[in-house]
Image 1 (cartoon, helix red, strand yellow):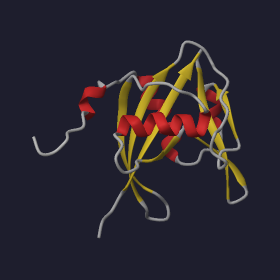
Image 2 (cartoon, helix red, strand yellow; image 1 turned 90 degrees about the horizontal axis):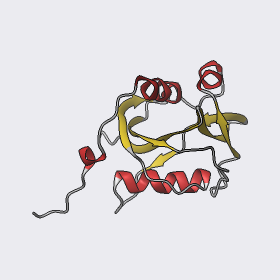
Image 3 (cartoon, one colour; image 1 turned 120 degrees about the vertical axis):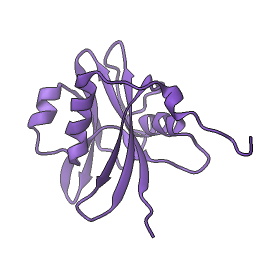
Image 4 (spheres, one colour; image 1 turned 120 degrees about the horizontal axis):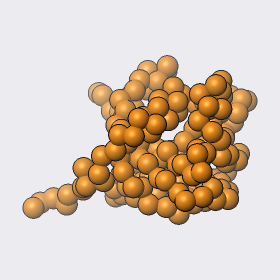
Length: 148
């Protein structure tokens, strides 16, 4: 039975720097946007806000939907990844609340594009999407309570 993992991620930008979270995977440091799985009884936007808090200790509201990625990981795990944009006026101190995150960094896009520490190809692709300036309004994802 096909059951893709539904995840959310946030491209967080401030002062031409991008927030990444660092975690250790198989003994190696890996960088990712603040991201994680959608949980029961939450909207995609609520999931993005929760993951940003858990992984970086930042309370912020997504401003737009950037992209929906369908991706199959090297281990054949299917993902649907909802990518959000958060533009902050300045870089803020980011402190992980989740023990799985080692630290948070603000880095320029060029550093991320040149890195071999990215958790997946979606990290760089997310930055490219951000740089193209495409945005969808959050109303695109309005949740409905059934029945009408």
